[in-house]
Structures are given as C-alpha cells and as structure tokens.
Length: 478
Image 1 (cartoon, rainbow, N blue to C red):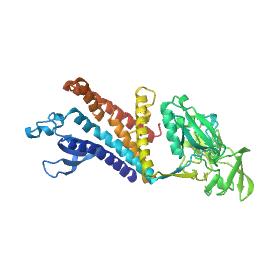
Image 2: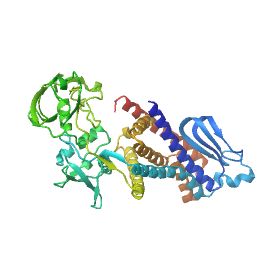
Image 3: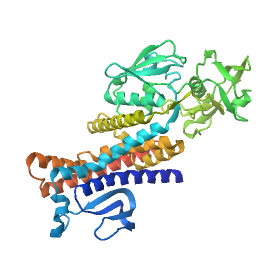
Image 4: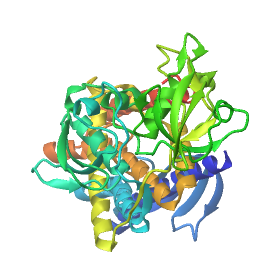
C-alpha cells in the first residue's frame, strides 16, 4: 500500500512539474513575467521566492495538478512599466507557444522515458504461445500450441519482427482500434515450418478492450510445458501421489500439449458442484505412471492466487460466471517458466523507438477518445486516479524499466488530454487562438464565460465516469 501511494505521488509529481515547467520556460523565453509556479492546489505548504521581483515557487496541499500564474491585465491592474511583460500583450504566436508548451513537454518526456526503458531493457516472455482459446479467432486462424510468432505485416507489406509477447499484444491492440486484420508470420519453437495466419480482429466490432474481448481473440498465454512445480502437502495433487517435476502427458485419454490446456482441464473438472476424478498419465524419471486426481471445489470469487503457473498466471482459474461459479483446483503449481527474451536497444535505436512509441500511443489515445465520443467504444475504457495508482505500484515492483514505461504512458495521456479542444484545458485556449488567427479578433468575454462553464461540466463528467470505472474495477463489477 505504501509503495502504491509513493509511486502514485511520484508519478503525479514528475508529470505535473514537467508540464508546468514547459509553460514556465517558454513564457520566460517570450518575456512574460511569471508570478507563481505551483505544484498542487489549495493551501500552500511550502514556498520559495528569491525576491518580490522573481517567480514564487510553491507546493500546495492538493497534488492533483498545478498551474503557472502569469502577469495578465485581464486578471488585475498591471503597472505601466511592466505591461510589456503581460501575457495578454504578447503576439498570437507567442501566446500559442506558451500554452502548447505544457502538453509538448509531456510528449517529449514520454519520448525520453520510453527510450530510457528500452536502453535499460526488460526480460519479457518470448512470443511462443500456448494453445488458443477454443472457438476463438486465433484457433480459427489455425494457431496452435507451441507457435512462435515471428513477425507482423505492416501497411506496406513489410514484415516487422515481434520481439516479445508484450510487443505482439501491443500490435493486436493497435490493429483492433484501427479496425484492421493482423497478419502474422509463425513457426514452431525451433524456428522451422514458417507459415502465415490472419487474425480478423476487424470483424469483432467490440466496444471495450477487456478480458472478454481478449478471450474472443483467443491468443494463448506464453507457452509453458505441462510440468508440476511445488505440490502442497495435504492437497489433491499430493493425495494422488503427484510430485514436483512430473510431466503430464494425458488427461482422461486426451493429450496435453501445454500447461494452459492442463489448467483448463483442472478448472473444468466440476459437474453440478461436484469434483470429477481425472485419470492422469504422467512421466517421472523416464517412467510413465497413471494416477487418479480428484480436485477440490472452490468458488471462483474466492480463488486465491496460489495454484499459479511459475510465470505468475493462475494455474486453476475460473469458468465464466455465467455458466458456473465453482472451479476445481489441485493445490500445485502447474507449468514451467516461459522462455524469456531480453528486449534492449542501443542509444539511437532506443531513441527512435521512443519517438515511435510516443506517436503510436498518442494516436491510439486520440482514436479511443474519438470512438468513445461517437459510441463505438465503451466509456469503461476511461481510467482515473485509483487505476493509475494501482498500476503505478505494480510497475514499480516489476522494476525501473517497467515503471519508466508506465510513466511514459501516463505522460502521453496527460499531453493528449490537455490538447483536447475543451475550455479549461490547454487545447481549449489553442482553439481560442485559432479563432483569433482566422478572424483577427479574440473570443468575446461573453462566449469565454459560456465556454468555460461548458468545459467545467464536461471535465467533471469525464472525471466522474473515470472514478466510477475505478471503483467498479476494484469491486470486480467491470
């Protein structure tokens, strides 16, 4: 909990400081006098000012934003000697540059963060997949257990290497939002027998990027051999005589190709609330043994995180709540650790990837917001501070490179959000300046007041929806 709170505060602090510093730095460069640079709102808890003629830097009690207050004749009287340093006296292009500098600073920060994450490098599962979900797009496309996804095809027909499972899922998300099929190049685990598969994600017409959608697509988890890890004393696996290191060959006469398929068989070994015995054929020290395993029954909602694969996935997950509320489990870890690959880039490649990923995430964010606006995407995709805090804590625990990647993602989101043409946001002010540039006159005070009220209403609505989604996710309602 403490880690989550500290990670959240660090995330907010870094992004707010960079955003406001963008405004501040360009304002000073344009000759505008900056009265206050504030991190947070409300009561001031710390301040520093070199002299009354210099900028006052403050830290306020509510750290959910910040602001840069500039000298402006619209907000109060300005001495004649300083009118040339007032924001409202600057040229249109200077005011535009000052307002745009905050979001641009966030986007540039994202480039550096993504680049830094790639320079440090992370260990990610290789795109070697287990069995696809039955009846899914992946299964219909001919994908099978042990497939190694080598590359995806871009719009120019060029094949681009898939570096890891995370890379594959990112491309899947982008193609899903663009409404385009994803063409993949596959081979076996040794790199032989190359073939192609087409995932028709454009046919799904989904409104929400959630677990149910990913199940319909059906890409398997990273491939894991059907080996048993730790066997808990007193559990069904131990009672059946199973041991750590046993390789499961068959269950009830059906071959087991990977750990994911074995987990599915364990979960499904319940009929009308009663556990069903299963006949397992296992290999141990070169010998083939046959044992009867009867899982115990637990409620899906009460399932703890034990019975997981070595990769961290739950070994005995649950059935769809619409068809059953109980599952089987054997109290043993199922599956070997997935094959890992080091994803790390050099200085120039890392920087190039930083620009590329920032552009991709920015365009993806805009497309998602646009689809939500016209009803083609669910508002459940909006996330608020609780989700950000939760993911921040998780990414910190995974390591510096993961946290930097998460920080970059939020920085892009903040930059794009602030460029939306809504009053109260930087994008709204830029729209005012666009009107002024086209008509030669500024927006009237009457319309400014009306647009301001409308902008506040829209922002409050967005914040309410995001907070509702956060609470619903924490309660398991989404």
